[in-house]
Length: 297
Image (tube, rainbow, N blue to C red):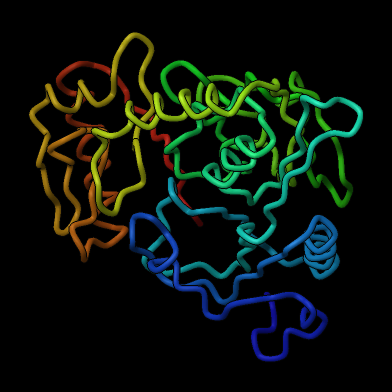
């Protein structure tokens, strides 16, 4: 466990302690981690991960913390927050390729795309993720997923920096190899195309309008994946669960695949509501809902 009194050898890294996850997560709940580090470059990220490896320190990597549920009791692991590790640059060899660091927010990346006239990522508009988070879970909307534009992903694996091809990422619906193998995503080279700014703006607006109806407030976004041939939100709504509440956690009246924290929900209450939804849909429709969100441990 990291020595939280001296942090000997970690002084050069920017950190926050304690790290109150209820203030950083979009759902607004969770306890504290002992410490969170904020690397601001690829070299800092690699140095920090290498230091963890040398010290046998357990760690957890987070981005915007928008589709995660932190535990009420907090976590013992050190947290690595990628928000400051957020640059992007065009490939000097292939003008349509762009390398994006893991912590860059989707909105900031789309602004970069507008500035450099790069098109192809507009479907990320309104998805409150970092690029690393999008790569981790193959984020997307309306049948478009980030896997479509991935050329390669740069990761930290077993103490080394590796570059994986698109095929090696094993992308599937809301899934990737990164959800199972422990790789730390450092960034990705994305395949885009050059076009005019107006075309990019029009595409961004199209996706923004499509998301305008989604619920506001503290949430994790969509809680469940869509089962094959079904909409998770429609199944939950048809099961009569819109507005269902456990403590401060409530199924949204606007979109039933969203759980809203009305202000004081605990992670336990949210998890209990998730379990109740799964059990109800299973009992009524014999369909097993699978979480899209990630439980932090």
